[in-house]
Image (tube, rainbow, N blue to C red; front, top):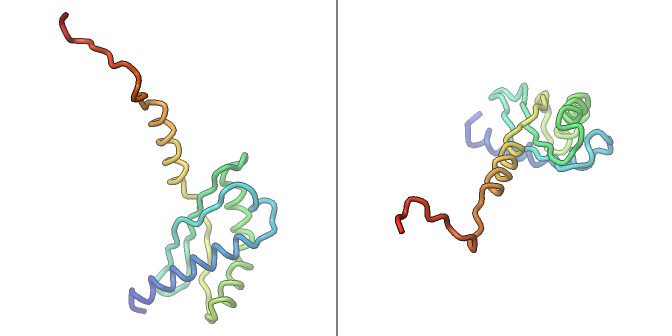
Length: 127
């Protein structure tokens, strides 16, 4: 399969995954902010690794990843049905800590921010 079509199929599959996960009624998946950050599909469409970011949940991403991996058969069937493809890849959901790390860095930077009206220290200047 040419890489152009492979990339386009992966993007379409990612869009369908987002819709399917959003429609799930499982309480382990609902609540908080769940984002599909990346989708890596093997060239033979046998397996797809789905990176998800979960923010705003007390238990963290582990219960969500576990629930999605349990429901991967349902997700696979839905993707196959919606995209009209005979064989959908096996989905493996993994946690992506990139968004949480970025939020942590932004928080640290906000704490270090100097207010524009604050007087600057004149150390090192002789008077």
